Length: 217
Image (cartoon, rainbow, N blue to C red; front, side):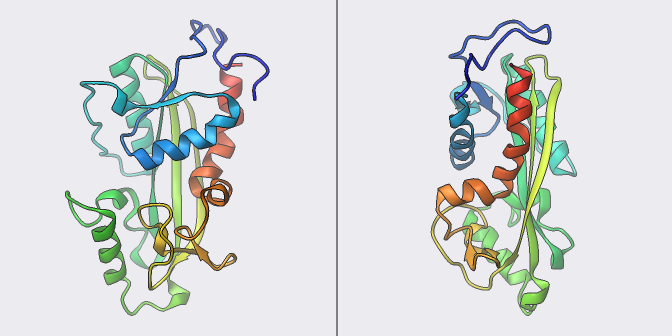
């Protein structure tokens, strides 16, 4: 836990009350819960943009995870006038030339679900040998101040490969198919505690948190 309030008036900023949450620019309940779990040991209170009425969905038009994370953080912060943390993450498969990439959430179309995305992924990898099924999860995190200026930006990855059959019911998205060979487990089989150490999102936050703490120290 921090020895003094997380929010403080450094860098010429106005003091923000300790109870003021850091807003996560996502309506994805699973992502918000993971982020809240990662920040909880540092006395950071987290809320979701879903708790704010009338805020438009940010259109993810970027060509990279960094573009989309910055766009979501910037536009959401200016819309609500608060500090916003936004991330963009997804799966990059070697044999598919990096796809689905930034289209991971809507890989199978506008009405995509986890099931339909996974079905398309496995169909496109039909006949691809295990040696060529390498992949990585990517996570880029950006933090914007209330004026919409990006103050922090980090990225991290987690390498693995795509299994032929789903394993495990934990996690979400492509997790049941994303295998960590050194652990002989998919993300779908890992406990949340283990995943908080190994995942792309956990690794990105390991890089982000020291800088985030210093920003408001």
